[in-house]
Length: 129
Image 1 (cartoon, rainbow, N blue to C red):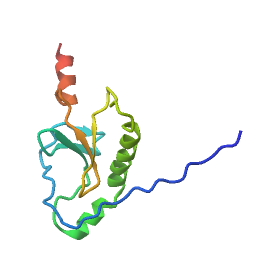
Image 2 (spheres, helix red, strand yellow):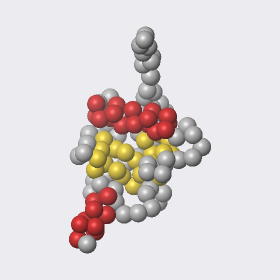
Image 3 (cartoon, helix red, strand yellow):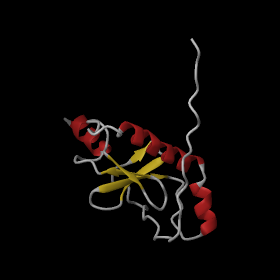
Image 4 (tube, one colour):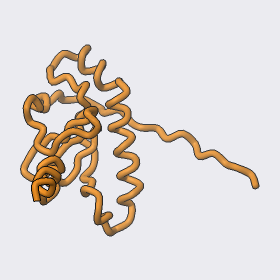
């Protein structure tokens, strides 16, 4: 049986025409960390962003390029591709947070805020029972 390879996917870097204020994430890990590499940060009432821990929150273009082209930012952007493939169907997956799209400035994934408590709080609650 012949084995075929899929072509490499191009993951677009964000187009930044108008710099916006940086995402405030110091002490704002509402929904915890993923393997100590990504913070889940609430950016409004219904939305969280998957933010690499290497994110630099400043207006300096040089440091912005450093985190934006780093390994963690690349992995976060690959997450967008996976979510876009999973959510091609009309019904969302019952065990995944709903994917809302890419952040227009950073191209990082935006997810619908879960209705329940953060995972750490849920685990601590059930551990005590």
